Image (tube, rainbow, N blue to C red; front, side):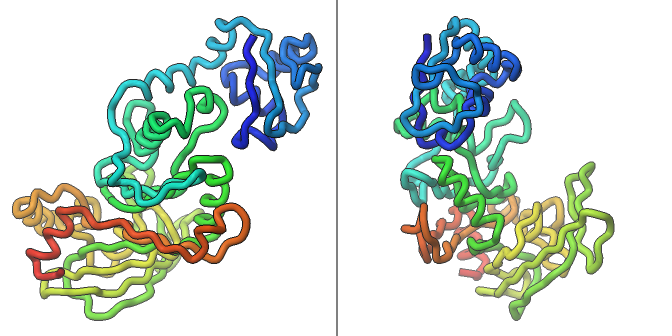
Length: 331
């Protein structure tokens, strides 16, 4: 017999939905059969599956451990993978943490979220960190998995917001979706930009090449409207250091939008100049675009996370970025 005590992250959902998360490989018919036979009970009583769970409720599974493990095979594999020590968060990468959220300074070179089952991402680093600190247990992973709420390209560094609790995930996701969180980036682009601007257009993605095109009018159905504003912080004849306000948030938006006006990011081989990029690779060992998510500004809020109202969080730029600013006369 296995007993599960419902916590904050599981409360509020139906019993059958909870069971489907706990044993993901089991068919729904299995749960309803076990509920009818009282092999699964709620608070010691027979249940139908449509009951809404509350904190402290007890779900008892009168099932063989082999049965539970068999229906939870994917979770068992995830736990095994997480136990294999690879990457994990360093304290220096954590900009802010409370019981609901994490703000992380992601290094360039790692995915925000896993693109396939083989490659590590920041999510796995977060899970290992939370397991190591006791903020998360392996049992918790069966029904709730902390995750990131915004994404950065693999070779973009900077602020990533992650939900540690269900409430944290929900609030952050809403803030990003409704564009209430203001997102600012720093970048170095080719060419001289003397004044700031607010540029707009449509973004069209080619799934085959994983590349986007910017145009004044939509090229096909589903093209996304985008807005980007920027202001120069310093400049030379060959490069400009910009602060960018990402108003809409689409894949490759900053990279492609700035390239579309003739000022691609330095270090960006997809949208930039190979000749310029090779020069910076030779001089500084640069192997990623000079784009960093530097600042998040929270709006006035009520309810959960209201302690973050009007708070501003900043992530320091990477050392190679800082070195290039100084040596290129942009600091």
